Length: 372
Ligand code: UD1
Ligand code: UDP
Image (cartoon, rainbow, N blue to C red; front, side):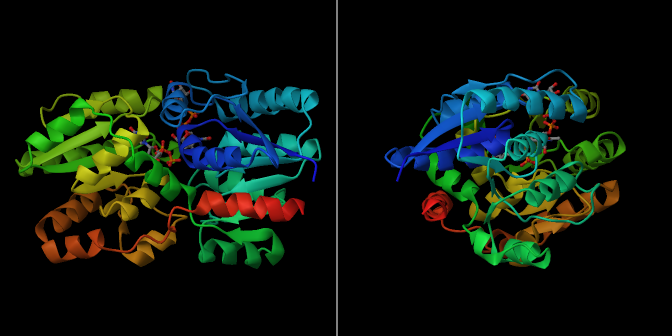
């Protein structure tokens, strides 16, 4: 078989973390696949951190990020930028990931050039196009033009079957984030925050991340006010928040949380360090997608700061609980978990529904079968 040329396209931190294991696996099969990594750099610093941890050097870097970029900015610059690459190089398959605007625009560019699209982490749904926004629409739009669906779970396969997708084109792989965790477990780099968390072992660390567009403004302020109340009530609570680099997030975080000695606001951590930080945390409070998948694998309960989740597997496994962003709800849910050991242990011991860390092997095997 003539070597097949594969484009792996991504642009943000979570896509990079979840595509890196696929790239490393594809690189083991250079006799069959010629793999080119195209980054849009929708994120710059947060993307580069991941590339460095996984030692990946992109073949193409569109460098699109602008401060306060709008969704239209990202869509149009990525669409045009990828088109320039597709004119210069012919690809047999384009791999995109998840639900970002980079992924949507890259899939659209591939479709316009009549290149088959493979979608990693396909099939997730809330069926509410404003929750999360714009990710729910992005993932439905991508799946409308996808040829090969790599889904993390049987439930996500069901979503696609219900949308009349061809069963033969859907492969259940597990989530590649578990592969990423396997990789980061082997790294032993140190960071001052890990020492800090060790030193204060009697303390309870709440790990907080928040960045979603639908949570900008009041929802974020409400959650942060609940966090302040909890810190004031419980002297053993320390809050750690690696703050997303979005200027909108930065400004509300600094304004509301900036002045408390047990609320530690830090820069985004490299993912290997961050995985160890999750491990050392008592509880995760987040609106992140990826964290909802990582925490069950690392045995830490997660309170999800959203109204809806496209990851019901974690709810069913018992490791996640949806709190929304109402101040009282967040406050009471944290209190309950801190006070009720039985409930806490049940959540912490729930089983990881996202596979055994072999998703990227399954993806590459399915790609071989596709070309045969
Ligand atoms: C994007 C994705 C979201 C994903 C999130 C992961 C879209 C529409 N949104 O949202 O699905 O959950 O990434 O974090 O695709 N910035 C920096 N440096 C960085 C990264 C961001 O300065 O390394 C700043 C820039 O000013 C940028 C802003 O953050 O304009 C927002 O970034 P953007 O990618 O537009 O949105 P996110 O909220 O990060
Ligand atoms: N993450 C990281 N450093 C941090 C915070 C998060 O590496 O300081 C990782 C985390 O392990 C997860 C991913 O970033 O894999 C989640 O990204 P984010 O919350 O930005 O996006 P989402 O998953 O919501 O799309």
